Amino acid sequence: MSMLSQAMLDHTTLDPSDEQWLRGFVNEWQMLADTSFSDLILWVVDADDSIFWAAAQTRPSTGPTALEEDVVGDNISYDAEHLVTEAYLSESICETSDNQLRSGIPVDVWAIPIIRRERVIAVVERHTNRMGVRAPGALEDAYLETADILSVMAWNATYPVSPPSDPSTSPQVGDGMVLVTQSGTISYATPNAISAFRRMGWGGDMEGEDLRQVMLEIQATHPQIGQTVVSDMTGHHVQEFEVETRDASMRVRVIPLAGMEGPIGTMVLCRDSTELRHRDRALVTKDATIREIHHRVKNNLQTVAALLRLQARRIESEEARNALKDAMGRVQAIAVVHETLARTFDEDVPFDDVADRILRMVGDLAAADVGVQARRQGSFGLIPASRATSLAVVMTELCQNAVEHGLERKAGLITVVPTRRMGESGEVLEVAVVDHGRGLVDPQAVGSKSLGLSIVRTLVDDMGGNFELRNNEGTSGARAVVTIPLT
Image 1 (cartoon, rainbow, N blue to C red):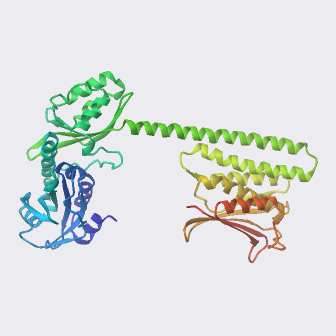
Image 2 (tube, rainbow, N blue to C red):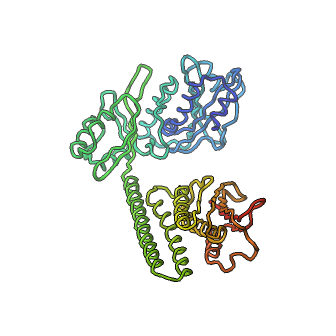
């Protein structure tokens, strides 16, 4: 649970809808921190209205911090002269500009009560480091003007909290900001925003232009942009979307601004996402190439298995025929893994499907002569691709060994039991291959000359795991157990 949720649960009697609104506000309040060049603290009031608790805190990415320490979890006891208490009791925005010293740094402080349904549900405190205030200019003035509007919106609980932004993809204030009047005229655009629009194909100035006309002209040059972008960028609700041309792309978040009397304009945050789009497309191409490679490897391995099958049919020696069949099973097990990797977009393999196909393959080969059945009991889950091929070969070898030596090529049942658990250094997978044959005469000496078990031991060692072969306790047959780390 987040500190904000914990603080509201432990100390407040807020309505669930108010709690949800505050969580949404904290998700979006970086806009206020960046435009005001201020640290923000969210204070929630205790159930008895005597103590305020610091439930959340953020710092600006556009200027220096005014608070070197994290204050989340701290509290303010009732103090009529404290700015937070004053804002809470007066239900109005309070500020001080007497450059109070905090750790030797002059700091301006604002306290903004959040009033929702005629009740103060929290107070936002703004701390501005005056020593780090940037030289005044058009950008700084636009930021501070926007911060004042956002502060009033927080005060009136009309701050844009929905739909939520995504920290990894949504544009931030520093990426690019365009301010648009209620009539649709661009009053200011930051240098980053101008650069993003230039890359999209706009060649003129932006300030004083009609945003709708700007988008119409870009759209005329690049009709693939779509017909709804113009209305989207001048709408009355928070919206976020991607605008693309043949050569560039831009991520846009449209945020309506409102004052005490109602709507007053729009803030458009934009980020040049051209390079990100190129990387995404390159990754898609790379992923498709990798899956095509897995598909071709699978086809080649199936060809090799077919050649081994043809060769086995032409050999009269029973021992040589069995050796070729074993080799064919190993090749087919690897082919199954590559076929699964060719169908998935992830680095992990859903191994249950691989295991079931291996069991069908082993069962079909044995059932043709003696009627052996093979089944899975439990789930492997997702197995890292780096482990999947080796695990498939290990499982094939153990099942074939159970058919040949455990059941001695007689009718019977082989059960594969996968179990995932936490070990000392992370998650591990334990796989038991169980038969109900005659069991091991000498468990210590078994497998010393077996090629299959030598392959198993080598592969398990390469994966950093353990292999054990022993008799079943309290019943007939043998149990081969492989334990490998998954992390």
